[in-house]
Length: 256
Image (cartoon, rainbow, N blue to C red; front, side, top):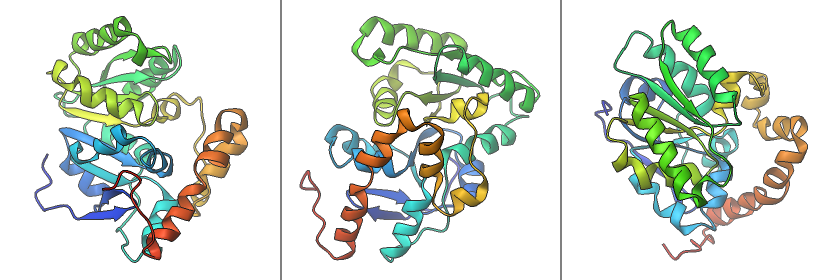
């Protein structure tokens, strides 16, 4: 970590984000654990205590949601800007394109997609920055042998940064639980769907849609079968909880 100033923690429900800019994150973080907090992960922290309890272990927690950015303004505790993982990663590899000490392993996505992403990232970086990729099966976390294969592949690659796209909550648990077994990795990036964005298998919305806080709707329209539970059933209750926080009525479900 090169960020020298103390980062202000801004509370939101039973979690928090750090108030920092994208430029500070890009220039100041080349090791440690990053978490880009969005509405889905915030909602999971209302039900999954193990996930919530990992939060203090992350060196930087960003506001990765325009809805959360608006909510923090509504709560009277604004952050300077939204710092999303999908915006961050292209800037990250552009920043480190001439830094041979920064190499990346992509872990996640559907079979073959991470390899496509790796090829495109390396072409943009002008060097072999992504040095390995692996797509574990969905139930990887219930298969000790699969976990061993993942760790072995990451270590064999020699990567110093690990981008994990294994699903919100699950990817963070994997990183924290097994980081001591991956001594060469210095920077941990749980960035969800970034592998699909970099591979070009899922198109990012126009900037005005993101700025308006409607990226969730764009994703729902594009992938209704995959996204409806998340955006229609799981996430709306967070708005009620945020209103409770504004009124001083919110209570941490875990008593924190």
